[in-house]
Image (cartoon, rainbow, N blue to C red):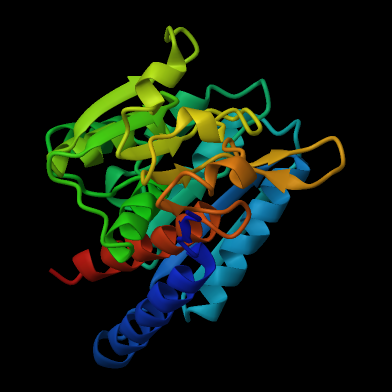
Length: 284
């Protein structure tokens, strides 16, 4: 048996086309163009690529984008002042600060400075609490993308055993909340979990989000399981790979996401979805 591939590129293109249509209609009928402001501090190469991709996605979908770039030695007060300015600008619907930040920053304080109504990453404590209560304002983009992929693959969720490897605030924890909300039985594994394979072999849905290259191998997967690989790692040869050993896993799984071309494209897509939703809310 070879797993069916969940193609993130194809799904992202489909969803982005829908978002572009909605954005065009919003502009035509209400005179409102969804706008995302992105703040980049420092010269981290990966962060520069992520920001460039986010800005490009905005422009292609007919959104307006603002990019604010600061040197790595900038004083935090300057960035916080810019966030306050963007919070007060009614034409800006989403604000995103690219992480990681240089060491002089308190990242939590920066994220909390963003208005919860414009926190399209879903990282503000108020939005995290709303997600926990089952009434999210914004769903964090990567878990949101995973849920869209499960939906597109017609993966049964109610009563399914879901195992998440990784407990980060960005992926693992919100992923658990979203799957719980769909009546999955959820197990969250992490670096201190004993006998990881015991848990992963029980999973009808396995989400790997731990940041360790090819950590999940085929012999750790339940036959026919849906395997979602959130990891993005670079091998010594310079190639991208996920947290799942794709070659062995695809021979066991029923559905699997590749890296690259799986969850990654959906993350930016759902960022656009959150920004559009924020713009629509300003009209209510």
